[in-house]
Image (cartoon, rainbow, N blue to C red; front, top):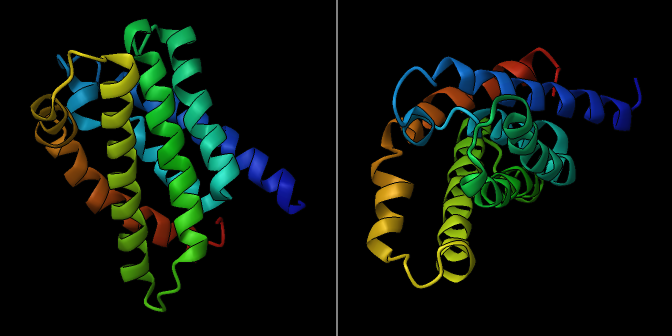
Length: 172
């Protein structure tokens, strides 16, 4: 399979996972904001398919999830699209730019910087566009870090393990 076809197939797979995985959490109130299940496949996609396809995964995943399941709700859709697009793009970009020989250290550096960039984009866009005039630093810190702490922990534990396994299996 040529590399563009491979990236397209993997992108479609990560989009499908990103649409289906959050459904396992919707029985828990506010679970999406707490556990961030849609973020996981998008962040992994950036590692696997690079910045362009990672961003496409970040854009299409919340759109398709909204169209199929109604989640994220319409009022959160645009900000989710932007945040996830940044995650997918930055993970792919940083994975190609950061030259750390130790793969564990590199995966964590890429992941943490990507997570911070997506949360920063989320905060800036909410402050300037989506919730202009009613968005504060406290609201951003609460939503992006405090409420999301369980999801952040899951990402920091699970994603490096999955990326390492996918690489070992020569899938990415």
